[in-house]
Image (tube, rainbow, N blue to C red):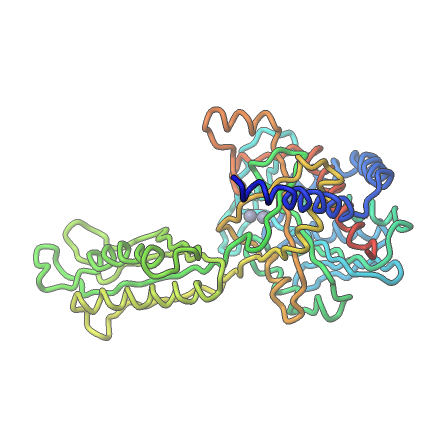
Length: 450
Ligand SMILES: [Zn+2]
Ligand SMILES: [Zn+2]
């Protein structure tokens, strides 16, 4: 009690000084905030049409030809110089406006092979053949149409407000996020060398459980490293009535599935996050046949690269060890393949997140910008922060759902349709307007030179 009493003036001093500090953090004046708001409102009718057009005309990853062309044209109309076909259908729009920092804003362009089940007037009815030749429905079930509409709106408003900032805007439309090939393709095609090198990279991703009109932020690791691991557990097949003449891969695979769960619980440091999920197990054809092999499909997730490597090596070691202990011959040990679709974790630069969250709070109101927990989902946006240039990056979450629906879901315990659900339907107006105003505020603050 006495000690606390002695500390109280210090605590108050700290609180007061941090308050003063936080007020000084953003360079956005009340009149600037008003101007952003009114320009975003003026643009909305056209952005709504753009959104509905994009929603009704989605394209699969690596096939975003028309989408990229539309976004490129929109950027040109807003005064940007646009390069097309950067890393596939990627586009890079540049707007130079004197000397100052360079800020990159990224939208993704692609949609998913999902048949839309919403009853929206502008629902997608698109059917295409996928790369395997199957006819699939196509849907913007991950909200990339919201990202694109907010991105175009932000480009327009920043272009109209050129008298309020100095520097360079790099607005990129990235293909193939869903198949995590777009960011690496754009980087390999010279995104940071052929075009002005950014000082900061920013992006939105919609959230399916955050009220429209609000935004979320997460400092540090926000999204996971992800690898897909295929494991073929081989045995020696035979008749189900004579198990003693076989090495049963179904029993061996079952032991492996259980033992893999000890990697996270017994091998990884408790404060480091990791996931090992066996999502698929297939083997055998009939009651009385012991098959030759069983196939496992495993997703491995972590934040730290060292934990990722450790987990994959442990899967290999444990599966080999169990096969050996079952007496599987050396030439029939399990085969492990790590697929090429590795996605690196996304690390949101803490200083950048703090600064941008401040401008978003100034724009939207402090209660509308909330801290969110990191998740084990994946995004290839993380790659922009992992090049040798070590550019600070930050991805923010954009609310999409009517507040009443969020409240009701909390009351009833019934989850809302998630991202990648055929029923996901964002509320366009508040989501897009918030996407435009909050991102414009963030970029203006970063380009204010202070
Ligand atoms: Zn997605
Ligand atoms: Zn997405």
